[in-house]
View (cartoon, rainbow, N blue to C red):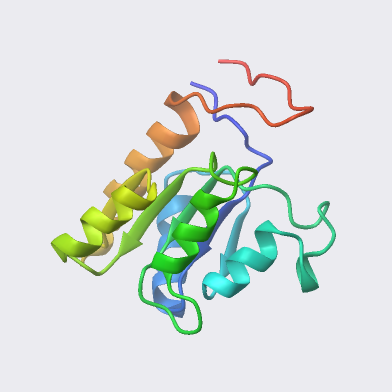
Length: 157
């Protein structure tokens, strides 16, 4: 199967450097060829998505095909960032997968109520993370059909 949207980046929003590094390693081991961009909190995510500050040039900050969002971060946490993304008509169709250490039922329910597309508790082992990233790649980059943005052409299967 052809990986769709290979030029579109995956955004990982997480303040933990080790989690970012391990997730990137797991994605690369699963042969994800999309660019992977790292942001450290919800404020940086919203600046990126709205092309503000260092992300003002849309050519250097293209629309992501997927957002991996941690909930617990400084400045603006993932809960608030998810609310803002899903409330914005221009952004709400971007898939957001919550990838967090939280297992709290309240966080799961609130995330889905706010519009998260999936909620995954971070695996404790690298092997578990490999399996999760393989499943994410298969589903979000190969199987699912997402709405096209204006000017995009359909991706071949």
